[in-house]
Length: 334
Image (cartoon, rainbow, N blue to C red; front, side, top):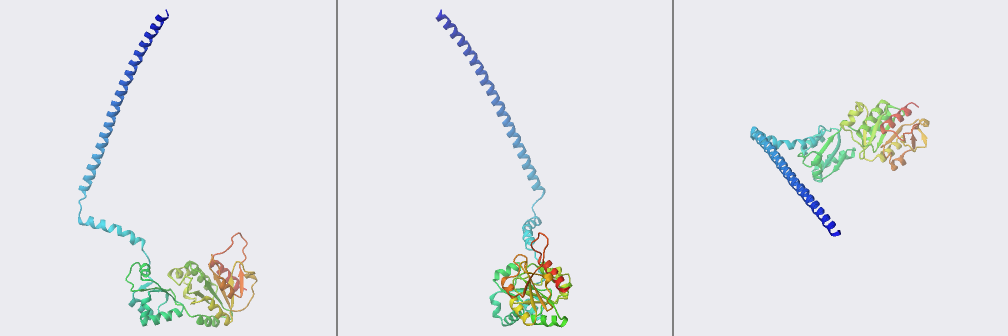
């Protein structure tokens, strides 16, 4: 009985195995069919992609045929890249002069000059040596630089080793400024700028100085903006009525002013005396420093007084031109 049951069970198992094998073969056949379908769909996709590529190629070739190459097209394609350097190197050279003959003519005509750049070879010429030496003594900044530096400044012009930038107004000597200020007023006020390199600030200070009847401006040869077109524009015409002296050394100029009876005042946020409490009736020199650094330590030692402008808000400092205008208002109304 046991053996017969085992045989029956084995028969059942064999029948089940056949059924499973049949189902497996069906699955295999269905997977093969699916693979064929997928392969056919991939082929169709490739075929469609191929057709699209061929269409693009034909369109591109027809586009090229519709615009045949000629000389005008070739020339425009060559000129196109040159537009970008021209825009990048665009610079206003209205107040610039370069070349030996042009510069020498400008020096002989005694035109107002802001700055000169030249190579060391220029000084071998006697005419240039004498002229440049005289200009340097008057406070004109003369820089000895390389040939490449001048080429960079003039955007590759034929400069022959020298270039200059004209000033919008002539400067006068310190002696002439002292004499003219004392003739026009018993207690004149002169502004001295220490290290203000922003032309917008210099122009605004000149405008305020003329409005408050200041008798002149002193600008250091180095570390200061010159009398450029930007300065004149911001000054809004005040530069035509206010004399400017450009000195080689500001500290020496302050010593010379002291010898001529001027009191030197420095505007500083650390000053112990408020400007509203200052009551000296003497010729004054008001020194205004740069916004970030203020008056230099050496110049502070030359000052007789360091005055502060009292601030009531949370702002710690003022713009240099604003500080100059406030100080002139207080000093001219005392």
